Length: 150
Image (cartoon, rainbow, N blue to C red; front, top):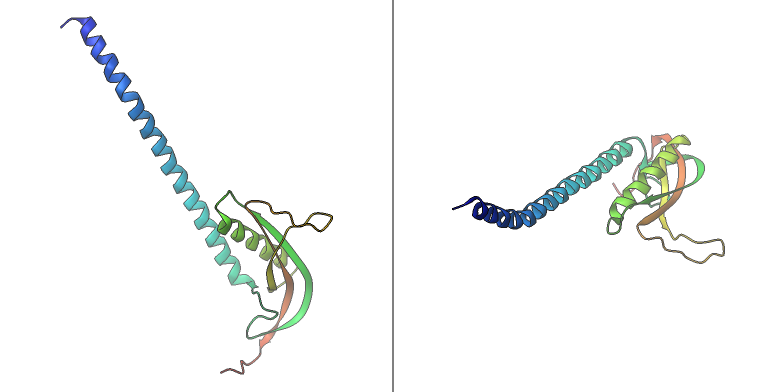
């Protein structure tokens, strides 16, 4: 076998190996992206759990078992994420809503609702991947009221 034959076989092997290496590199990149997304979602969940220890967020007019001492006013927040990640957008919106309420000195956010985004004329405008939440920031009284169902 001469050098030309060896180089010819080596060239063919490289041409066969390049697509496999490319596919491997793309698969490795996708695995890394998924791990990064999972880590970001876990970080959002941890942040939300930490905030829930400081401030409550409920869809009802009152926090169960607690009396409202002062209404601090309405609060609203938006969260966004890529297409197909509305759960992430909702977590981001809830975190922002709870932070805004906490900055007002609130102990809870009551009447938390999804809002429909509207333009200046009142027409509903849907934004893909965006969640808007609103509620009322309240200060809770230190005493708890008894639950009549017990």
